[in-house]
Length: 150
Image 1 (cartoon, rainbow, N blue to C red):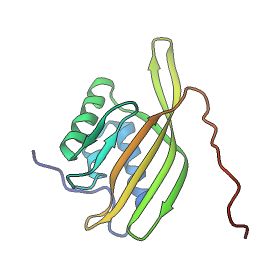
Image 2: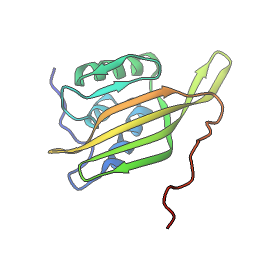
Image 3: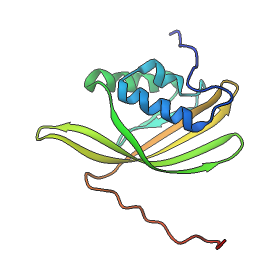
Image 4: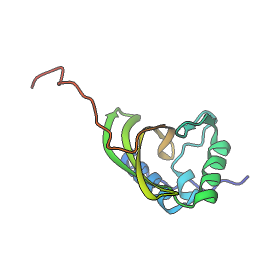
């Protein structure tokens, strides 16, 4: 299978740009744009809410293609992002507000996601996306006081 060229972010960009491109691709159902966000490595992985670990570019592409085919675009909107940033990697933990169509009509639910990005020769790329089921009500974040006072 021929892969499209990587175009998610430039070498001068950052993980935030890749994350924005990833969620835009989800919302528009654009598989090529979505896959351009991912690193081209054998050990990248994705875990969808309640699903198995999906490993590798081809397997990840197949799961997103199936989701786009079955339901079209995925209406997921990142909220409340927490970041840990270093020189060559970045971890984002966020709440995704997801709009879903149920038999009773449209509703919203929450998903808790962690996205991991590495700086590669092609710029910043996603190497892991782990999404856990949340709830249909607002998710309350539990956070302690800061450990160091400034």
